[in-house]
Length: 180
Image 1 (cartoon, rainbow, N blue to C red):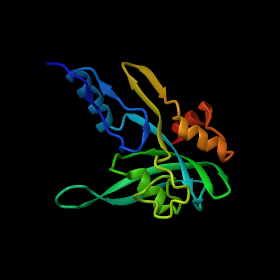
Image 2: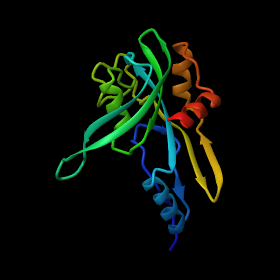
Image 3: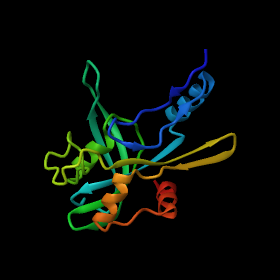
Image 4: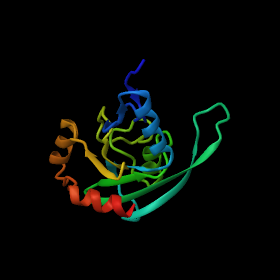
């Protein structure tokens, strides 16, 4: 019997886009696209602090969630869009798909994500919701390019407004995605 299937996952606290397949065949197709790194994802995060470099690629070993607890490599590209006061508005493009990858990378950069109760021990903004959004997906299928952009949740938008942060433009997203 055909049923809807999650093709990939987001952390429970992360908002944004998620691919759900309508049947087994679609699940296999999208699963292969992910396995072959043919789907690009851009995440938008509001972070507490500023990374040293405004743009870079980070290669980190992250402990796997399995019985062997072996570490595996994660690769993440990032670009700082704006810094204001003690906040940074950052785009992340994970090249690998490890659990909590972006949250761990932002902590490693010295600017954990606002609202992250696991990796941001000095969460000064005391938000219940993680300020991390799976903001854009891009992939090619049957010689066609598909792009999807999420609407930001109200609490995310309010945080931008209340802290005078600028919203990312579609052009900035596409430019970064094409070089990442």
